[in-house]
Amino acid sequence: MSEYYEILGVPRDADEGQIKKAYRKLAMQYHPDRNNGSGEAEERFKEISEAYEVLKDPKSRARYDQYGKEGVKGAGQGPFQGFDLHDAIEIFMRDFGGGGAGFEEVFGGGRRRSRGARSRKGETIRIRLSLTLSEVVHGARKKLRVKRLEPCSRCSATGSAEGTAPTPCGTCAGSGQERVAQRSVFGQFVALTTCRTCNGEGTVIQDPCRTCHGEGRARADAELEVEVPAGVTGENYITLRGQGNAGPRGGPAGDVMVLLEVEEDPRFIREGNHLLVDVPVTFAQAALGAEVSLPTVDGETQVEVPAGIQSGEALRIRGQGIPDLNGRGRGDLIARIRVWTPERLSSEQEQLFRELQDLEEPAPASGDRAEEFRDRRGFWSRIKEAFTA
Image (tube, rainbow, N blue to C red; front, side, top):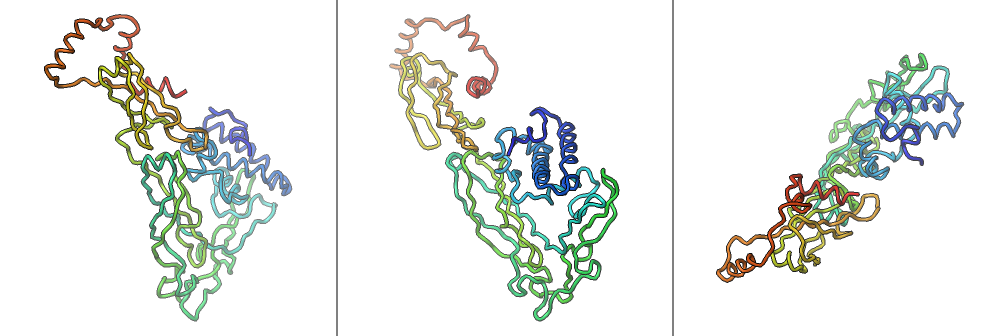
């Protein structure tokens, strides 16, 4: 599939109005009811609708701009699993037809799109999952405990008491739908909307089950497992399809939306896929150079500090940051050197420092190095400028 901006024919900096205008023009051009049911037009219409659904929302658009389709997929957006023509038409009717979900006939004189009685889908369950920085770096398989509604075993999810059965709805005659006259950009048409009496199921319960009270589902505990890919952030979430509440009276189950939270690690600051860490060194190590230990997510590692390094300068250890969510390599570990000044000196140390003071050159008072010392911008801002190319 092409890139979403290309699908709508808009630039990457297009505003909301441009995106909506482009979608409307293309949707009207490729709507299946304007193309005699052409399969090619239908696929194009679905593609246009999917692109619009992601780009019209600022949050999903930002994730798409940063991570591509995998980013919005990991966040529970598109590319949509199970996205079909019915979904595409609902998007069109919601934004331009004066209606919303439930329209099953469009464009007067066009083809009929009746699905008849339908089962209601179960609700989505939202649950928070806390991750350590190590789990973010390596990915993780986590177990979740959830309370959800599962099919009632007593009535086999029918909702009816033992020995009875649901009866056809008198309002819709069992079809699950009512006809309603509506207007759209294409003129007046007759739409089928969900029956208000039976909620689209086509049947009603006369004698409800005593366990589930006619719902066809009962509360239960469940243990689920979720695969967390490496490189996620606290803005991502993972959708477990069909693991949510069971639908009423045999309806399909909803989803579980796992909202990710990343615990702070006191050793590091995260900037995108890079990790930032402070490394203390002594005067002698800074002046003479040394091999020092610094923390990484996987444990301690050794790094060479060059002679003459200044406090505030940074070293870059490639590939020791966070993996890219889309599999494009791994970020770096950026170590800021902090020259440690001892608070108390022994008499011998003090004597040595005084001897050194008599021998050393004075600190620079002008030039590039002094200007660097006087720079009041935040260290991490300068690091980001230097390393986030």
